[in-house]
Image (cartoon, rainbow, N blue to C red):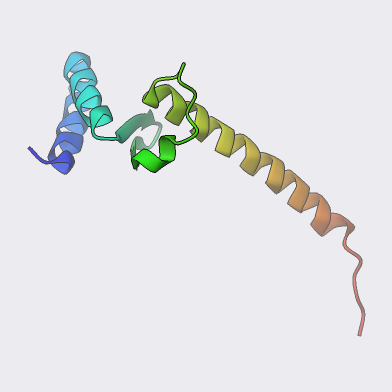
Length: 96
């Protein structure tokens, strides 16, 4: 079965609340560095490579690292967006 077929099967299993099968499929895909996360709009699928885990602490599993990295990237994006909005507010207007 292909990765895409497993992802589709997991989506179908979620619809009928077959949580054990969902977990089994997630574990299989995790082993192939494909990480699925449930989101309000459906499944989020992250296709990763070994290089992604280069700085992973040994105390974390790959899944824990991906979860942490997603949260950290989101946090940094919010900080940047906040900074950017202050730059737009304080930038002087140049008149020609």
